Every structure is written in structure tokens, then in C-alpha cells.
Amino acid sequence: MAEETTFYGLVEDLEKYLEYQRDEGIQRLEVHRSVLEALAKEPEPEVVEEIVVEAAPIPTDFQSLEAIATYISTCTNCELCQERNCTVPGEGKAESPDIMFIGEGPGAEEDAQGRPFVGKAGQLLSKMIDAMGYSREDVFIGNVVKCRPPNNRKPVKEEMDLCLPYLRQQIGLIKPKIIVGLGGTAMEGLLGRPVSITRMRGVWQEYNGMKLMPTFHPSYLLRDPSKKKDAWADLKLVLAELGKEPPARK
Ligand code: SF4
Image (cartoon, rainbow, N blue to C red; front, side, top):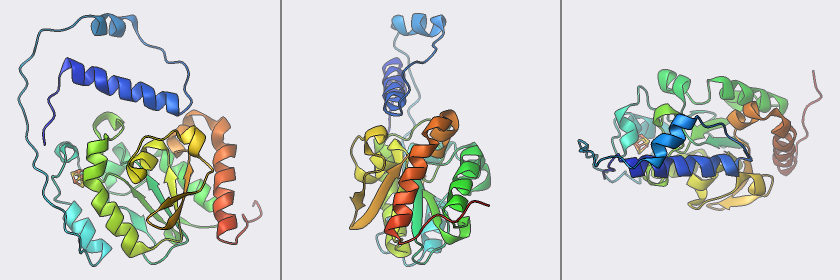
């Protein structure tokens, strides 16, 4: 599987990024004039060195999360392997936690540490988990892709599809009572189709017979704190489904 980096490829990536921002509710973006001028010119065809990454079939009979994590650590099934420092398989309570949180992919801090949600967005996720009456150790936290997309770009569908067998088997072994999908990209990866998280959040979905609650990604909540109340409403629905109430505020 190889993808040529071309002017048109970059334009396509930009288009996807803008669609993503739109789905996240962003209505205005500042763009420097030089960017618009560069986009208006079609460049000479460039010769690009092609790097071929062969996708190997992922085993379907992992017996433990450790075995999955070990396999992931040497996975080269998609181009995300090329710039990663650490793979990030996920962490937390491995046996039937009430909740499994799933984001789209690791960021810079996660890539450096090999742990999920340890940057600024992760700190907010920890606060959200705490507000629900849990600790990070009580839940499982993972991502759709296990390697950091360069420059924190959104993982593309092909990358998510190639990585999904790991997550699917993790979910099968962990058996969470409820899955919380963090952000539109994670939901697209899980459901295999485009979604608008703004419209879908707070509405129960199903993933392989399990209840799946979509809500905003913590990094989006950092950019737009006014949406925190919506995310909290979604998490309260999760607690209600578990027969629990949020603990009294300290
Ligand atoms: S993102 Fe997933 S499929 Fe791609 S190289 Fe990493 S572990 Fe393999």
C-alpha cells in the first residue's frame, strides 16, 4: 500500500481537514494569503520517492492484551509506522471495566511515552473520568490507531481500517460494559462511515452488540470549553446506563 505525496494529495488532505473542522462546529478559519496563492498555482509534476509499506494480515486469535501490544510494537502495516517513536496500544482496567474510552490516535506526548491520553487533552479526560466517580485505572483508554499521525493530522480511513483489527480484538478481550467514542474521527473509525459528531453525540450507537456513546474529543473541548456541558450530559447518560450517579462535587 503506497500513497504518492502530490500537490493534489495535499489539497485532498486540506479538504478533509476543513471538513473535519466543519463537522466539529468550526465555522471560520484564518488562512494566510500566501497559502491561498500557493494553492491557486498548480505546480510542475514532481518526482517523489515512493515508500512501499506492505500490509501483513493481523492474527485474529490473540489470547491477551499483552500479546496484542507486543505485536503492535513491531507493526508496519500502515505508513504511520514510519514516524512513530512509540506505539500506544492503550492501558487501564483489562477485565470488564464499566467504560472503555476510545480516541482517534496518539499525539506527541503519547508518542513519546507510549501511553494514551497523557497530554493536555489527556489531563482533561482524566478530570472527566474523575468527575464520573472513576479513576483512570478503573477504565480502559485506547485509540483507533496505535501510532501517531504526523503533525497530529487526522488518521485517514485506510489507516484506521488497517489498525482496527487490533482494537476489535482488544474490545473482545476487555469486554467493557460501555464504550465511549471520543470525537468524530474515532466514531468514523469504529463505525466505518463518515459521521458528524455534533449531530451524533449523546445518541446511543451500537458496536458489535455493545452500547457505544459518542461524545466530543477532549482536545475539541479544550478549543471550545462551551461544549463541555454537552460532553458532561453525554457522560451522565453513560452513568445512568450503568445505574450510577455522578459523585457529589468535592
Ligand atoms: S497505526 Fe496500527 S496498523 Fe498502522 S503501523 Fe501502527 S499499529 Fe500498525
